[in-house]
Length: 278
Image 1 (cartoon, rainbow, N blue to C red):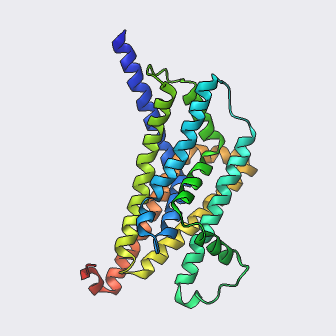
Image 2: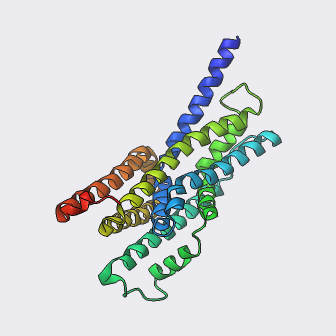
């Protein structure tokens, strides 16, 4: 009996951890982390590498708080239906801001476009807003806001109800913690990887940083457009849910391909650059 209980507990924690890994691979997570890392990198390279960690901590704190609240209140049921709309709108709005911020950064770092930004334009407004938000707490806040969605809250409610039947003290918190740990591994790795690449290569090839910034900006804006399309069409929403993992993997492939493609182009254009060591 004890062995069965231990096996069930290990299985439940492993499942929660796996769900966290999958959640960390969500397209909006990856793009938000990459967008913040790109924006913070020029002036705050150390903070840029921690964007994924901070984002995941903010996200995880919301999950843990909901799970603990459900456990203490002995609450059951589903999250309110309005979270499906409000959570989507929050994610879309944040992706738009981050996408425009990266587009603005690319705009001002491109020599022949640097002087063409006009006060009052979306790019100018995004850049001005983001310049005032370069603080670690902002990455935490963005992660927390992304957690205010129907899917994330629903998972946190299930953890709080201990549907995985983990036989441990404060089991809902332990299960939610396993979920957050899985998410933390993926999100931290994503932010650290991109931050390290930018810190290593940005001073050697400026156009590489601009190319990746443009890619992240376009993909963030496309993700926001995808979110709007999902709100407008239930059929498209179903397709996006089924293709979620493929969209996430496509995001990773696109970022890696952009980096290596531009790095190879830099090597051909500037052979001496490859021999430089900063």
